[in-house]
Structure formats: C-alpha cells, structure tokens
Length: 217
Image (tube, rainbow, N blue to C red; front, side, top):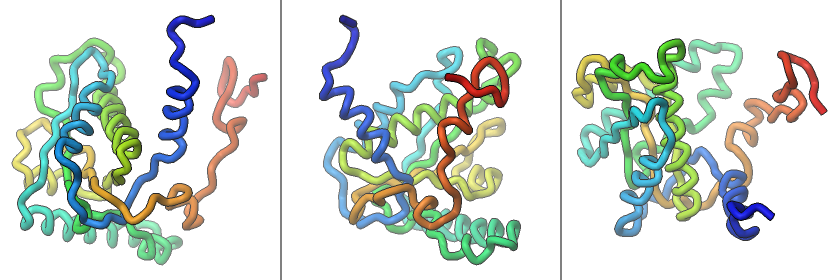
C-alpha cells in the first residue's frame, strides 16, 4: 500500500482533465465567475521551474484597442503562415487559429529580462526557461478545463511586434497569447485532429528504450 497515493476518484479526475483538455478557438464571450482568472493564474504559479527561476510574467489585456491590434496582427501572421506552406495553404486558411476577439480574458505570457543570471539547470540548456513557462501554461490549461473554461494558446505572432505593443523591456520575450473564457462546447477531440491536419502517433513510435529507435517491452 502506497501511503502517498491519492484516492481512486482523485486520480481518475486528474487523468480525465488531461484527456479532455482542448486548445480552444471558439468562445461565447460570457463573463467568467469572480475569482476564476485569479485561480487560473495561481495554478500557473504552482508550476515547476528550472533553478526555481519562475520565468513567467502575465499581462492582462483590458484595452479594446490593444486587443483589436493583436487580432489584426495575428490574422496577418496566419496569412503569412499559409503562404509559407503553399501545399497546405487552403487548409490553413480554413482553420480557426485564434479567438482573440471572442474570448472573455486575454493574457500575454512572457519571459522576463535578465534571465542570464539564472545558471542552475540552464548552463547547457538555456531554453529550459521556455520549458518552465510551458509547464505554467499547462497548469493553467488543466485548471481552466476543470472549471469548465476554454483556453487557447496562440503562438502565431511576430515576437518583436508583440513585444513593442506591450512595451516589453529589452531581453524579455513574448511566449503566448492566451484566450480564456466560457465556450459553447468543448471539442470532442483536438481540433487539428478533427480537421485532418495530422494523426496521433502510436505509443510505440514515441517511446524507446536504452537508445533512439530501440523498442522496449
């Protein structure tokens, strides 16, 4: 008997929220409950970070003009993305890749400046600061799903342009625009899977043992 094990119902809930998490693009625009946004940010702050550097900064967008400017910029970048892969350009144009106008809350997640002072865990892998931010966003994603809220991670933007929009200091970097809010319904499966963009890989194609490409038991 493992004394540290959670009850079966708690374990089932954890796996359920992982299975049902979705990258959402469709929002109702309805208001969120009081305290919900704060709880989601608190969940993000519980994430692990390399060297305990906590390399996440959150900027809430409440200015309608800034939100509209971000929407226009992302729309332009979506067009550039389609042009960059001409063989699938029409597929890209059909996909809804953001919900900036429709979501209830919009957040910028960014890396701070002066990160070079944090060496522990980053001497050979400096990109671990980005990995830490991704852990924080995943925490928020799972918490949002558990609260019945959609969250969409928008990454189709020019970091320099977005950095200027928000007045980020030199050396910092935007990582994500997060669209958050109530949704009409959750996608039954990942949107890009439903759209036929790609297919999920089998576990055997992703997990090896003792060396690259070596199958395990």
